Image 1 (cartoon, rainbow, N blue to C red):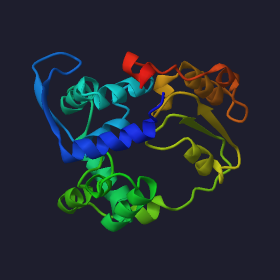
Image 2 (cartoon, rainbow, N blue to C red; image 1 turned 90 degrees about the vertical axis):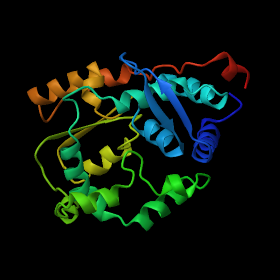
Image 3 (cartoon, rainbow, N blue to C red; image 1 turned 90 degrees about the horizontal axis):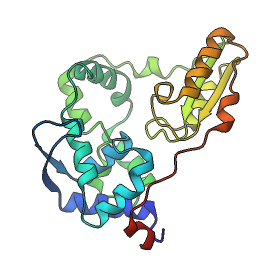
Length: 241
């Protein structure tokens, strides 16, 4: 593929932030069409949320670059119409506003964004993906700041299992080893090709967890060696880009 994914993502984030798309699309689960807006921040949030399956991302991004936003529009429609009982906004805001948001000033969020994505617009970088305008929300939600407690390092010799997905776009796989550095009897496992919430996505991760519960100091991780990420899907345009 001549066009790199990094370049394509940056181009589409900039384009959509300058010229957002307003579309009417049916959610993947069916039902009436809903109106969705795709701007640069929305695209970034959808990528972090794994709203489009990993294997389909190159094709979806290539289609977007060629004027077809259908996959991302449907993913946005799905996020806008969650199934009843699957998500608690109050719980999410209580955790975010107590444990995450107070630990970083808006200027620090923007600076971190500029450092890691220098070719993205500030309007996108100023808002953490999936937590847009969160400082404003937290002023209204008004829960106690618990960041100091959350930043205390856990030191323990209790057997622990740390499972990470190599495609986790929320808590990168390297964080697993970082978290385990002070857990002297921990087992760190990286599951190839999966993202956040690794155990529900992987039969191997489930087997490792069951083995850990049976033998906390010597879980069986042999299934990991046979795992490979699913191959990316491509479109004809991608093959000749």
